[in-house]
Amino acid sequence: MSMGERLREARNKLGYSQEEVARRIDLDRTTIGKYENDACVPSSTTLARLVEIYCTDANYILYGKEMKVMNISRVPKNCMRDIYMLLSEYLIEDYAHNENIHE
Image (cartoon, rainbow, N blue to C red; front, side):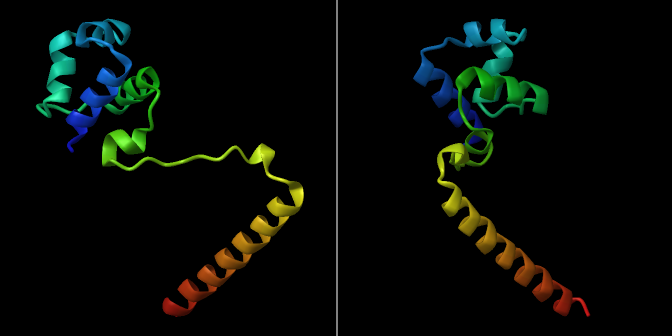
């Protein structure tokens, strides 16, 4: 699925018309159609506005892959400590490995 197809899919899921989206971001309806037909690519600013309107993930629109974000405020503190320790160990090992490669 192309970026344009994902934009169209996101718009259709919400039941918005091209005209409605264009009005909300101050563009022509034909421009929205061009994005959806892969005739042109939205600017980063326009893409950010489309992602906001469609309540979707920019990674999904751009690459077709959704990134799940977890609300860590609900993770128990003892689990967070373990996660931080494991992540720290991984980053230290990765850094040391990369330093050895470049020596």
